[in-house]
Length: 413
Image (cartoon, rainbow, N blue to C red):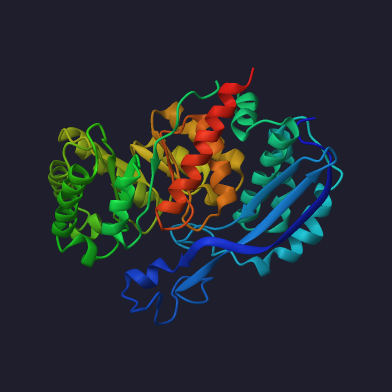
């Protein structure tokens, strides 16, 4: 039995790795007050504009002494672009402890995939947040690895018929608002993809993007100054729809700007996440497809990454089929079960679209380590260093876990 018979299970309230922010209120000009914002939230489900992230910590114990852990969390920008509301543990703790965990007790499975499929079917009628399936499926995958005395990577490779990995997955960081000192940290520690940058307002982007171009040029100079020869990171900016706002979603003007930005960050490759944020998924797919086509026609090499309105496995398939992105930011908590995350990466690869195994700065060390195992097994094109916005801590957790997992996999007969 891969998943040992479960004899003990518990769930308790814990902390997320960062905060949940009402992005709509922030983008509409909420005033900063130290580390919080003044005013009332605009997105349903938020109690304040910035809330401390919450987690529901799940532990499963098998009769053979195996232990599985998983953490239920939501993404930072919950409640927008088709996402579920922010996750509050008190809304679900009682149901998990009184309905879900008793259902798990006494059960065992021959495969992780069978376990998580039964869990999904059971949870469908309980009106549970996607965060619950995210944490519970982590715990089942972790329990399977513990029972087999192997890594999460090996469990996933075996069950999905994938070859064992031999090399690490490139890791990208988030600087948050501290995009200058954060970039220095990322460069000094050799992050593969940087800086994300949190470019979300005209103050960050500029009226027509001039501030982002200046920042890109500064970043190139900083890499040249602080890093040794041979360090060639990918430059990644998440612009939260600023491109669309600055250029009224005019594809020709947006393409012209992206070509200029691409030139500013040479010789490094450029990724742009969420260049536009439309009011519906259909509009988002249409505009992103037009932008990708326009860039290809202009000979640009910028990779366009989709995030907003791309929350589920079905959404990912829709964007890929429409040619509406070069890469998908797979927001793991939004997908719910980690089995859907695995399928999402495999779906991207089958469609010829890059798979960026992401998630949220609001995740935990437990969910980050399990994400590493999945990224290695599925050979994701890159993954997010998480949790938090401090750069150092997230990069340490993810890089160290990846190094350990690769050594263990290589050492197995």
